[in-house]
Structure formats: C-alpha cells, structure tokens
Length: 195
Image 1 (cartoon, one colour):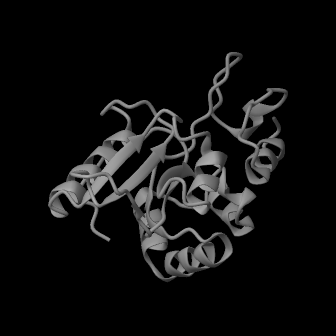
Image 2 (cartoon, helix red, strand yellow):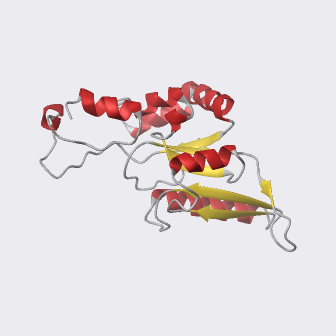
C-alpha cells in the first residue's frame, strides 16, 4: 500500500476499520450513497484521524461525481470506540478509525498489536501489516466481526506520561499508577513493567 500522505501521529497504534458496504440515502437531489465515517479525535486538521477522514471524503466525493457523500463524525460524535465498532457492525455507520486498544473486545488476536516492543520502527510495522501477516489478520478480523479492514494507520510509538517523575527505563515505573485502556495486553504490560 502506498502512503503518499505522511501525517504527524501522536499516541497508540491504530487500526483503520472500515466497512466496505455503503448505506443508501433516498433524498431527492442528495447523494445516492452516504458513508458515515466516525473517529474519536478533534475535528481539526491537526488531528491525524480527522485529516485522514477529510482527505478520504474529498477523494471519494470527487471520484464519485456526487453519487457518494461522506459524513465525518469526529470527536466521538459517532460514539466511543466500542460504540463506533458496534455501529459499523450494525450498519448504522459504515466506517470507523479506532485504536488497537478497543479491538480485542471484538477480536482477541488483536491483543498482539498492543504488545510492547513488537515493532522496531514504523517501517517494520508497515511491512508486517501490509504483508502476508496483515492480509491474514484482516481476513480473520472480517470473519470474526463482519468488519473489513481497508487499511491501518499509526499514531506513533507508545508514550508514557505521569505527574511524579521522568520514566526512562522500566525500573522507573515501580510504584506508579498508570491509566491504560481496558485492554488486557496494555494492563499486563504496565503490571509487568512494575507499575
């Protein structure tokens, strides 16, 4: 997959989940199809998820000669990440850009993407996710959830923030309370690192 757009990414590794089916809208003079595309980030171009959604919208709407309208539901207006996935499964929304942290609730093998030190660089991550492993992962995700992954995005490598002290190595985590997503891999990682 070519990545001609290179965005400044911030947090955890995200999977770009999209359902290929389109919902129809029968308003006179309106687009023939409507794609509701949800994400959780602010609706500002400084947000990688929103910028991606806007670029997708522009390409799809221009390429469809008005046949397809893309409605962006940013800033969690399409629900929290879990709700966004459920809404895609139920056909309420057609696309969602959610983090890997939410996916294990729907597809246990997604836990692997949250493992620390899994990829040594973005280039390695893209090679894996665009290669045979990624293809098998995407097919298994579709079979288990009914959702087709059209592509993966990244939010950079995991960052750690706290109000007590600088963390440079795992030993620095001892005794800290670190909040994570409700993802068993994330929680086990922090516990294993001493937090």
